[in-house]
Length: 521
Image (cartoon, rainbow, N blue to C red; front, side, top):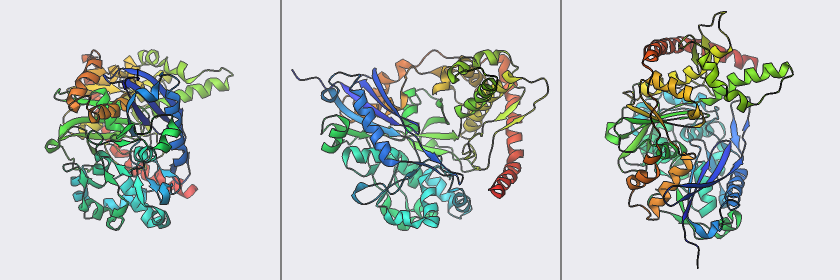
C-alpha cells in the first residue's frame, strides 16, 4: 500500500538559521531540521551571504528532515518557502548568482536612501507601497548599485529575494510573491508592480530585472529532477512560494484570527510589530515610515513597523556579564544568563532608566529611519547596578514596540507575541503594561514555517481558503492572556514620554558621532 501524502514541509530561511519543518495536514508540528548559515560584514556597512551556500543549506535541511520522519519523500504532499525579507539576490545567465547577496542588514545604500528621500516623487512612492525608504530594501539597494556598481546589474537577468532564490533552485521558476513585490516596487492595493514607484527609485530602465509575481495559495510549481536529487524528495512534488517571513511568522502566530484590534509582535533578532487591516483602512503616517505587507487573504494587509535590533540588545547586556565573569576566570554560558533575566527584573525598579535599543550598526528603521542611530542609556546614577541595566534594556524593547504601534494608529486591543523572548514571563509583563493591552503567546514553535505551510495547504486543496486553515492551524494554539499590571501602566506612560523626547533630542548627536567615525576610518 502506498504511503499517504500526509505531510507539508515549510522552509524558513532566516539570516543565521535555515529550518525545514514537517507538519501534518491539520497543522501539528512533527519534526524540525535546521542548518546554521552565516554572512559576512565589512567596515563599509556591507552584509552579504553566499547564495550557493544558502541553496546548499536548504537542500541539507530538507535531507536532514528525512532522518526524523519515516518515508518523508513519499508522504510529502507539498513544500512551501519563506525567508528573510528585503535584500538583493541577483541572478544571471544559467541561473547562476551574480556575486554574493546583499542582505537586509547591508547599510551601503544609506547615501542613496538620503538622496531618494529628498526626491519630489517620494511621497507618491510611499503612498503606493505604504513602505518607507530604508537601506534594507531591494529598491534602495538596486538604486545604489546602479550609481556605484553598475557592473553588477549589467550581469544580472533577475533580482530576487532569499526565498525566491530557493524557489528558483527547487522549481526552475524565476518568481517573487505579492508581498515583497508590492512593498518594494508596487502597490499594496493592486498587489502588482507600479510604474510610479520604479520612476521614483530611478529604476524604470531596470524593470526587466523584476520577476513574475506568483501567489503561493493559488499556484504551485513542481519540484525539478535536479532539486529532487539534491533534497531527497520526489520530483513533481508541488512547491508553494510563500510570502515574506515577517507576515508568515505573524500568520502562524495569530495576527489575523478574525478578532478586531489584534496585533502581533515578533521579538527575535529584530523586532517586528504588525496589525492586520483592510487595505482601505491603512494609516499612512506623515513621516513616511514602516511597511504595508499583503497577507495571503484577499483585501487584507499588515501594517508593519520594524526595529532593526530586538534580542540583539539582550545579547549585548548579557554579554557584558559574561565578559566580566570570564575575566575573573568563571565560565558561564548564554543560556544560564538568559535564565536569570526574570530574577534581575525582580531586583530592579520599573521606569528608572531610559534605554534606546538601537544597537545595530545599521541604525534604526522603525518607526523612524536613521542609519546613524545608536543605543543609549539615560538617567544612570551611582546607585544603579547590573539588574537595572537588564531592566532598562527589556523596557527599551517595550518602548520601541509602543513607538512602532503609535506610528500605525491606535494601540492594539490584544497583542499576540512570538519569538525567543516570548518565553520570558517578565518580558511579557513589561510589554503588556507598556502597551496597556493583554499579551498572548502562541504555542506554535515554528510560526514562520507554519505560515508558509498554511499557504501550501490551501494551494493543494486541503482547505477552501486561508480563514478555514487559520481556524485549525492558528487559533487553537493561542495561550491565556497576560494582563497589564495597573500599577505599571502609569509608570510606563511617563517612561514613554521620556523615551520619545530623548530619542528626538539625540538625533543630531548621532549624526555628529557618525561623522567622527567616518573620519577615523
